[in-house]
Length: 283
Image (tube, rainbow, N blue to C red):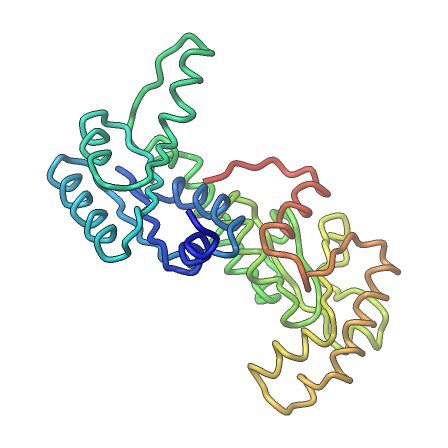
């Protein structure tokens, strides 16, 4: 293959199918982790969940083959299929197949000397399980305690995030609850707190649960201007003031913190879990 042909392959859209007999979330997460390493390829992703019988498998093969004819290149298929017969049909499609169960489960069966259960949906807990109920409870807790809406039951929080408005507290709280079942509250730091140079009264007694989020003033101004353009709230001068005062207060109170400017929610959540030694269970 010539250099020009290689370059042409890189710039063409490539279709990626996420195929599963369940939700497809496991395969999608794995695919995302792998595919983010390839910046020179434009990828079009399609998820095909609940492919749990022969008819659905044949319909999936048709879609995959249609993509092959349309694109001129083999699609890439990430799959987590338990049923061997359905999986065999899926492999009839003209595609590059990355079968996660075949790659990982079979070698583990050999290593452990035990056959896997080959049960559909084992990667996700059922709605009747205690783990699932715990996660729902954590989500409800985080929603109820978003942005300091209520001070009730804060003693139940695993962690309380603090920081200026729009520093990333809410999405981090919800991620911790949804992904790990961690009860996370969040509380804003406002100008009145800076004038008093003290933590808000309702959270003072929970200092050991506090974690601070900071952010670059320039980025904060961009985010706030999307919500309230040309306001003092969104001005760069005010953002610099609030960020500086919030960081000063966190240092004074000895509160662990991190800067959210260049960090993903996943990275922030991992930092919090590690710093507090929280027990987790991914869903």
